[in-house]
Image 1 (tube, rainbow, N blue to C red):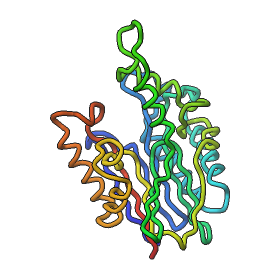
Image 2: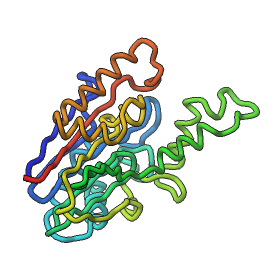
Image 3: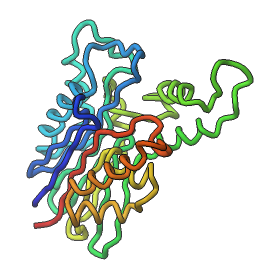
Length: 270
């Protein structure tokens, strides 16, 4: 069962914080989650360090028949043990990751999605379905719609206030969840399975590769999948890079990072 994989850092002078791997058992795609410069993360390790360790553990965990939530919980626990004594594992600003897992299980495809990386699935009728954990996007919309603060140095809808609001709701009930140091996050992941004989293929994507849909609004999920499946995952990433370059002057769509790490893993039946 062939896979195609492409990944590219947002900046050539910085580590790629995404992780991707494919094996005969399935695939793992992670997007590292860090904190803005100046925020105390309580840890000496960065997001790239974390995603590579968590990713390797998840790849190993795909072998066998354990439920994917259990695979993720065990990997989180083991990755947490690799931190040093000076790392504050209770600090939610420490390194964590979004997760997409897929596993071939007999005649079915099992899947797990946590946070804002996406699994696109095409059925044999040509319908593309996005399997998404929308809680972070829902929170962003909630904070953007919040009324202005009565006082203070920045409106409640300002970027710094929104950033603080998002970080305060990470890995707490009613917020959104990432794979950090707390294995309870695994219970919050979205899971399911699909019959393999009904699939024409799938794509596991970090949000850097889905910007054409989610940030620029120039693609549908169907467009995104068709480009990746038809021309290859590198073509999808280059499409996003072209959109980003066009926005380099006005910065209408990319007021934060002009470029983000981008990863795409594509599968189709042999």
